[in-house]
Length: 287
Image 1 (cartoon, rainbow, N blue to C red):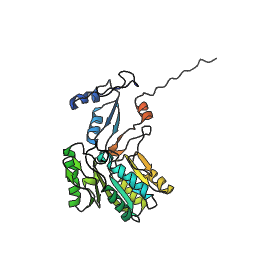
Image 2 (cartoon, rainbow, N blue to C red):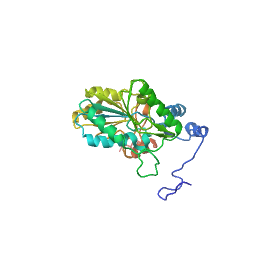
Image 3 (cartoon, helix red, strand yellow):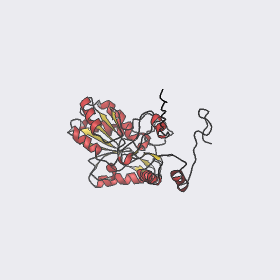
Image 4 (cartoon, one colour):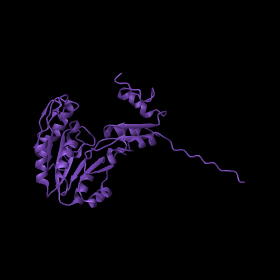
């Protein structure tokens, strides 16, 4: 037993570790009416294909973007983007992976990001001063380190970080990453963020949408017209204004589109998914 609480009725919440073969039974057994899965797109969509008639909710991967417009509060944007890109060592499906900055403030904000990122302490997560801990495994750290090296070999600029020691990978910033590099098109799920610049806000929105994923996006701006344009244009599950893509509270409708998933999480939305809407009609006899 890992933990007990007296808040829920006995049997209301259970954790059952299982092998992959054992877990398949939950996917195919018709007695279970809802499958909710959080994980990789490859596994999630495969489970949906096996699920048959049951409802399916998928919360999958992403390579989330934030736009920093020329009128943004840069100190606030810096604090939030550093957190959004590197909390949990970047191992979050809605972590900031793409930072799209207006050309008028690009050099200034890039310098701020590099300076702040270089101060992040990597090491033992039990140490209060540590911000960047190890990735889930050395295999995953090696995979992401390879993506970084590949991007640099193909013309990207390494602004800071990029070194690996076992499962530890430094917080890393790249710029000018060529189209098609895994570092920008796939889900990094690690301490990596990529910088690019824009001159036209519409082009920035197109860059956000130029992804097979669509979880959430962040926009830092004081211009309500830009906000409304983003809301109308972005093909994502959520748009967060003056905060990062990784903003989330449990009562909001959280989820994505495209390869990022299906359905929505959140208390109200989970209750609806776990319910069958029924209709009762009573015709009164004529007087």
